[in-house]
Image: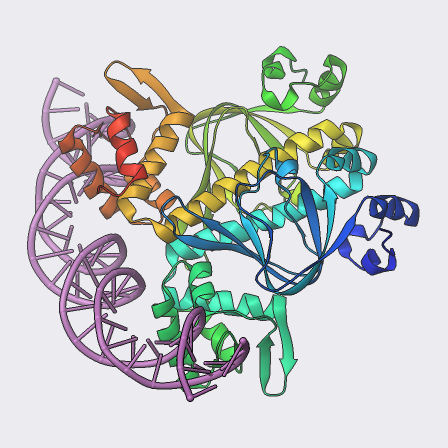
Length: 231
Length: 231
DNA sequence: CGCGGAATTGAACATGGTCAATTCAGGTGG
DNA sequence: CCACCTGAATTGACCATGTTCAATTCCGCG
């Protein structure tokens, strides 16, 4: 299948790649539509491909041996994911599931080293991407270590609004279905606590909830909660 | 200063690099001795160099705006650190301090892109390194989200024993000075709690404490604590 | 209209944090 | 060599945050 280069041209990742190189890359790519709730790959599967999200939204989760689940990250359009092989592991460390109808591009992992060697700039890009993820992870660790739950939830919500916010009348709408449970798994708490917190915020007019929905009405107010103890 | 290539030849990072390339690399390197307690670089400083730890042990910490500190990771001999520039940031995200007398090799960050382009394999290596760190970070997040403090501490101690353990008579000695505070900062708890836990373990004969010292006497017992709820 | 997953909410409880008071180890200087 | 001083560690009492358990209610979809 031939994919038109204009579809991906705008992505930061391919910023400085020549049209020729880009075309060559795309010859080996396969586009795929993923229905809401379907998994692109599952934790533990052999990593046969790596992917790029073109449209939609994915949740990457990990399950512990004892069945507890956490959300590792949310994949946004333009993000690479399913890197496994590049990081010298043969299986996927997590499960990527479509939170909403999505479109992805996939390449066989075998091609990765080749791409990287042919195009060092891509390697640098990829490394920066991973570097950012590492920083995010450290931020999360720092927050979990030092902040109380309400602040962490505030941060998480603000982050979502930046990465997946769509302006909507009286506020910012999180642009994909997200449950309290999801937020709980992102912040390391329980859905009960998240529910209580969001209810409280709703009372204060900071957000407006709904079933798998979230509308932020007062960014400033939330930011205040997020970055400082009140005194 | 000329550094002999045999010093670094054994490191995994330079595994498949030719002697010539390695020598070229080392021409630009500067060796430096760091006294216990001294910082190699501080959080927020402009990232002028990246480093390789040859000998000793470093603790990388981050401080939050409100003064709370966490330990991001411990650097062991053979590890690259102070990558900042490679990850497209201009300042160091943390502080690297010698936990014990150490020897490091440093290169100007400007040389990084050049090295990578000349030697794609190094890029791949570096990426794998970062990938591993990312996984470690996720593991930590998973543990902090789902496990109670005692289990987390058990994991942390076991990890230390793997990475910095030296056999010693009746057990495994953690080979550098580490305080309860340090362990607390690695596991996201307080030194009080860590102290209580270690005291309890000492009573059970699992470990043997001391001022900035730790000796593990029963790996199996600790592992049991680490990976399963008792029932 | 009824079913099921999502959300809300209350009450009891527990883990682990906070505060505070000592003790201890070890390096420094008299 | 000992007395001192500092930072590390220990330990107890109290308390708060957030979890657990449980009971409903709500919403959207078939």
